Each structure stands twice: as structure tokens, then as C-alpha cells.
Image 1: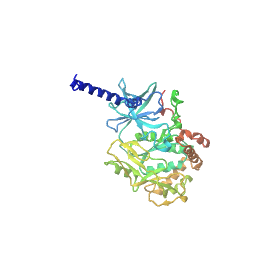
Image 2: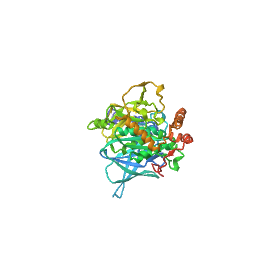
Image 3: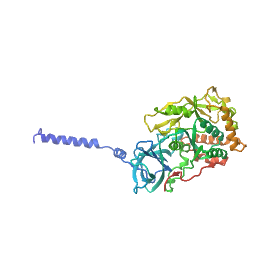
Image 4: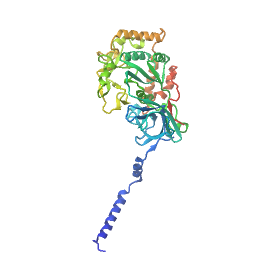
Length: 464
């Protein structure tokens, strides 16, 4: 055969190609396993440490409507780990089965925030768009031999004018005076509904909460212990109460915003009241968010103190708050029809991508415990808790306190909050320890008081 014949050249080229393929394709087996793993979808199974909030939500604010499930669990891989879900509809004999993927509510898992980073259990949301809507009766989660059934709640756009306040989990709470000021001040700003996630408090605090609940102003939502994992895997994983950041307030507040029925909502603690420069917050927020691309208004932090302190059960100092010259993180109010996911200090996302956050013309009045105005640099500001009739509101708060306690108003015991703060300091000193105040501080807190705990069962479900 002639060396320059076409057949000879073809053999040579084929041999070169084969050798090139052989050497270029030879790689360590780990490379193959990594690439192969990336193409595999992993179902969350019976050995996975996870517990679920007992409600699933059908969110009609999205088009198409969205199924939303909330959980506390070990970190997952977005777009890789999924729940196998059966969706049951009224009048339909066979359920619709779907793979539902999730993500951490905070955005990162583990958390990027120092005290939360070591926590094993992180708040997640699983969600998917729905093809069939209406008449959903229950959601069944399959995790191998484990199964969990969730009730269903429907979420629609909000048309009832007003402000709803979401309270992050109330735990070992003793400052009942804050609650009276908070409810009355926010009511004056246009608030009509308060959703309080409740874990524990003093008897005096619970008495105040029950008073306002009796008036139909407060709704108490149970937020008890997170419970246990199934016995087969419990010993292999940390206890949930001992490794979740501060009662998982991320989970509570994102569940709460779905339960808002008014046009405007906010997430603010019992020591935080947002006020506009003029008028009421409801009127101001309604003007700013109606027919505009504004989905949320942010208000700068103003630490305040009072003289006399309201912890003396004398509310007269409310008329002229003392402003401390220290900065702090802002808080916000939002259009409840378009809020999607919430962070503590800003709106993370909206159901309508055209909506934006904007700086508000007003301030956050933050009555942080422990500030002594005689030891702090102060500044003058014109913000007040009430938009008008300061004296009348103060007299009303004083009368309310007397009515709740039948004329025998209890004194404030600082030992309770000091004990809790000391426990948190001890956790921080350990380093690389989850600030899980629910489980890690219970023993110390039970030594100083007989707390009123919420012990409702069935709020968090792990399956069996």
C-alpha cells in the first residue's frame, strides 16, 4: 500500500484521534462522580432531619398560583433536593404528585450571620407553581417510610384597609409595659390587627396579651417547642430546640406575612413603633404605595428612652421621648399584596418584580431596654409615638394598665430580662455555638420564674 494513499491517511488520522480521546478522557474517578452527582435529583428521605409547619399555603397572589411549604431542616442543595408531594383536591379521586424544590429563607445556608452560622436547623421554604387550583384539601409529603400531612390555607390579595403587625416569637417576655405602648401607639397610626407568635412570658405579660385578645385586636399564634425528630434518626442529629437561631424568627415572620388580611403590613418587635413625619402611618403608606412601584417603605432607627421610665408603670414620659445619639438597623412597612419573602430589616422579594423598596419620610422609634439617658449623648428630634392628642393617649394607657390589673399595677422585675441577656452572653462566649435561646436558656430561665409556656401540639410535624 502506498504510504500517501487515502486509506493509509485515514488509518493514521483514526489512530491519532483514538489516542487523543484515550488520554484526554482519562481523568480521576472523582471528576466523574462530581459531574454525575450534579445531574442527579435527590429526594428528601426518611433519614433527613427536617420538621414542617403544619400548614401549606396556596398563594393566589402569584400567577399561576404557588404552593408554599415551610420547614426547619439541615441545609439542602437548591434545585437538587426535593420533596415528593401528593396534592389532594375535592372531588378528585387520585392526587396530583409533584417534585417540590426548596431554598433557605435567609438566602444562605449555613447563615452568613455569625451567631446563626453554627445552627444546624435553618428555616426553608419549598414552593412550586400549580397547574390545577381550587378545592385543595390537603398536602401529603413522602419521605420514604416517613409521611407528613399538611392542612391547606389559601392566600389572596388584600383589600381591607389597615395595618397588620407581625410579632416575631415572644419568648420569656416580661416587659408588659412595652406591649401597652406598642398596641396603643400602632392603633393611633392606623393598625387594626396584631399577630403575635407566642412561646412564653410572665403571667403579667400574658394577662396583658389576653386582655387585647379579648378585644379582638391581638391574635395569638402558638409557637411552642419545635418537638423531636422520629425516633429512628433523633439520636443521630442535634435536638431541634438546641440548634435553631432564636426560635427561628425567619420562619415565623414569613408565615405571618401570608396571614395578613389588611392592605399594609409590618414586622416590628414590641419595642418598635414606626411613625411618619406628618399624619398617620396608614394614610402615609397608602399614598406612597397606591398606583406606584413602591412595595415597601424603610424607616431609619432612632433609639429612645423616657423619663420617667415606662417600667415604673408611669407612661407620662411617652409624651417627649429622649433620642439617643446612636445608629441602628432600619425597619420597614410593606404592601401586603405584593410582599413575597421578608428579611428582618428589609423586604427580600416581591410577587411583582416591578415593585421596589424606598426610604420613608419618618422614623423608627426603638425603645431598647438598658439605655440610661443620663449616660448617653442625646439629640433633639420631633418624632412622637402618637400623631395627636398626646395627653389623651397617655391617660388612656394609664387607665388601661389599671383596668387590666384591677388597680394593682405590678412593678417591673429586671431580673427576668437580665437573666436572659446573661444566658445569651454565655452562649456567645463559647464561640461557634448556635444562639438557640429556646433550648439553651430554658434551664436558667426556669430557675427565676414560673413561665407561661405555650404547649400546643401539632404545630410542627416531623412524621413517623
